Length: 206
Image (spheres, rainbow, N blue to C red):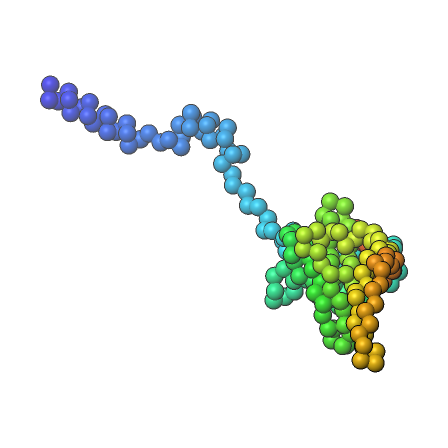
């Protein structure tokens, strides 16, 4: 009986040592079936153009004074871009609302030229860039600066009671309340509209 038990234990140990999972047909078939799912693919790194879609080159059929405009990122400050190709010169814009709403701060260029405040908005769906320079950035509704503005406003002016001293006597003069129609003239902002030039199209033309 002891001999038989020893033989059975030896056979079991020998079987465990010789069995190889890699050579097992069942394991091979499972691995082959799911091989495509086991392969890991690396995603390409996100480019700065994807983070800041406004970056690129633009062409305009409307603005003859800025037919080609280029927007590049600032090398040191994230969220700051530089706009070149404008008649005002090389202008800085600061990101206010992600991904593509920028405020153009009032700034003095290298040549001493003063550039008033403005707004820059890029629509990634239509690939359209809009720039307004000469009108303050609207925090509540930045796109409102591109809407048509009323040409004139009605202003109500109340003439106040004036006290005039004539020869030591006080003469009170009352003026009637009147409505005065005045033209509130504000400097007209400079506007730009352009379309982004896709890289594939640019390389094909070259």
